[in-house]
Length: 242
Image 1: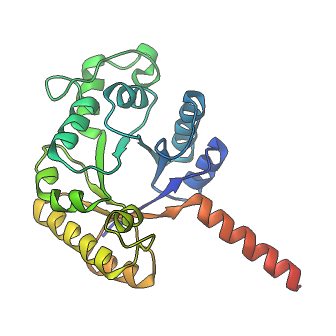
Image 2: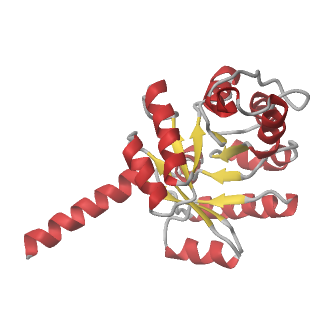
């Protein structure tokens, strides 16, 4: 069974995005929720993902139809919506990401249409079939509403957000708390029953083994910032001990 592995990009640098793609990762989540990223930075990062051979997904701060349209016009292949708690939010995100008659996205020329080289009908058809819309479950309300969210036609997959879920549940910054772990397993089970892929973000070896045993195909393998910090600290420690 194929496994698709991605990273959350928390260091807004196009060169790093290209490196992550060349390393073999399948997708990168470019973050607009917690980072101050300019439109030029975002567009260059999307191009770098394309050059590196991985899918650029963008996490937007909220369901903002105009922002979602601009991000897709820049070339994003997926839209990640944080803290989704209702079916209405999921439906509005789907409408913003799809062209009529499936949604309300507006059409323009530019890079996604090859600056006029791609037939507009072909582009619209492909975009409506291929653009990923990915809600994140990051709150107790989202867990409670997961069946309604999954019922929104066209949801590509569901991504878990264990750290924010722990905070929302009053458990502090503890993404591996047993209560959080139980909620994540429930969300994954509901996704399986609905036929919608679940994207896991395992925090330790036990979770990795569990998700592998469940046949989970989509994995978010952490964030680049944490991996870089760990590698730099380890390199410094090894060098000091030499």
